[in-house]
Length: 566
Image 1 (cartoon, rainbow, N blue to C red):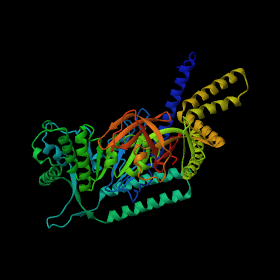
Image 2: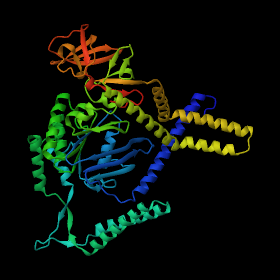
Image 3: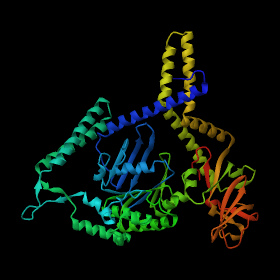
Image 4: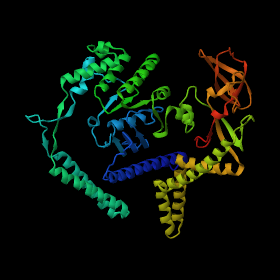
């Protein structure tokens, strides 16, 4: 039902319908492409232990949780997914674990295509936020349970101790299935007139597959049989893990007799005894108090270094991310914002979100307008920045404008609801002109305007392009000047004066003493900022301090896109 008597409700209803139709269209397109892509030969990248290639997740309600996630993880790395609640980090972790299906994209674990592998066959160990211990089992029982129910491939020998050999019928069956998929894919490519290079590549893959089948059909290989892990081995692994985690004295206790930190160690121990290829940890420390979190954080790092494991760790705590990770993946609303080492993320944030999410206190952001190499803030205060800031600014705005124009064109070309309305208008315009067709066309154009205005991304792109054009005309660029609290110095305590701003006299609003340093809150150019100053002398509220900015450590962000300029 469309509310003709209430324009606002009608517009809202139309926009919701357009959004729903667009989501359904995206889902169908993605599923159709993935169905075709599944038939391609899967080749794992050589340099990665875990590879996530163009991973997308769309739920049954057609809401997309993860967008085009790409990440290559090397063996023994400690990767941390960090971001606010609902950003898709746990969903991505669950897709790696096999607890969530992948809508589109490829997942490889240790060279094996893992999209369709059952969780039990992925050789991963997972540590949950809630510990997930069995209350009726002892610590030993909890740690040993996974091994007791698990079967591992064990080589078989004959009575004389010689390895048993046989034709590997299972692998031959799998290769025949792979051949069948490739032949089906080849036929579809020929029907759709794909380029000859693509067709030749598929034909080569089919030939290789057939050669392997022929070889395996004639060549016996060692026989392996899945068997339970021996009790002696289970006991040994549990004792070794309990020794590492210092919980061997609690092996006979049940979870209700343990503290939160001890329960978390048991959960870690259960993962360790698996000797898994990959450790997945989903906010394992969030239920602990602050002091215990710090202690467990260092213990997990030591454990990772000792086991040489490949670990993926999910958290919303930026301190955990900075102190634990070899690389950090910052996420927001299902999109990767930045991937890098803690140092790279901290010193070169990709955008305002990363700059303010990583670091405590957060980076100060001050609105200003840049003309030539001078930034003017809201109250008229000016700062002169080095010439390399100007070069980076010119380069950034040129590229960003081109990217926005390109994205707008792609968005309009794939805007399902817009294109459907345009097609209806075109068909009506071909009919004989009448009052009825004129009214229908006018109505459709009104609907088109509502649909276009309801697409937030399109509205943003139009606004961005217009603002970038205006900047080119005036030579004035609205931006955000970013400076971290530790890069604001007190004039009397300057050690390096290589590239500093002029002095600013600031009145102290709040002075937070943290032992060896102060967090000084003050108002600068109508903006609240925080400076991290030495506590070598007492600083009182309402006192005036002279501050300078270290311009070598400053950042410039585009006010429109919020991306880093310099």
